[in-house]
Length: 96
Image (cartoon, rainbow, N blue to C red; front, side, top):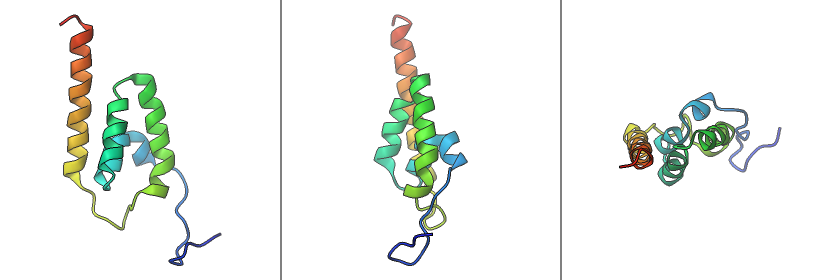
């Protein structure tokens, strides 16, 4: 197995937490902008499936899990933004 310059083996594998929580998981580990983009794209069901699969694949490689504390505030921000976007779209579609 190849090693990085720091001597540790590179992270690989699939993250179930990334699959289940997508943008919130990324935001909680410091990638707030990427988490917000994922959250904004997740209001469309088919797009959400693709976004969450992408998050599951990339989370282990990109996120400092175990090296950095999880920021619940960032995760809550992404949850609220995603909920607000979904609510606004549903309100508009119903003929506001």
